[in-house]
Image (cartoon, rainbow, N blue to C red):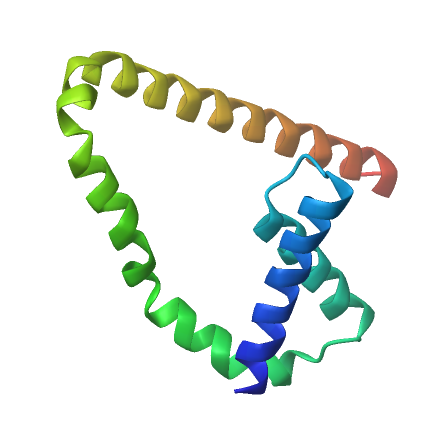
Length: 117
């Protein structure tokens, strides 16, 4: 229960910061960043949240149900733009793969140069 309270607390803190400080990021993302910083700094111990996070990961599919229902609700609109949506998904995936490959290649070359190999 402590793990859920910690996770919920960081989520609510992120939402509050986003609302009151006008940070242009979603509140849950801010909360996740703060939670990650707290884990790395040792403020929050992994053992405190591990059971709760494992439970949430095992049941992650349930969190997608609202999105699926939402997609079904606007399906007629999506059908009329299916080609554009599919094309943008393919192009953005390819761009992401190419950029990731380029960055990885550059980092490997930099590591080889710095290690003298």
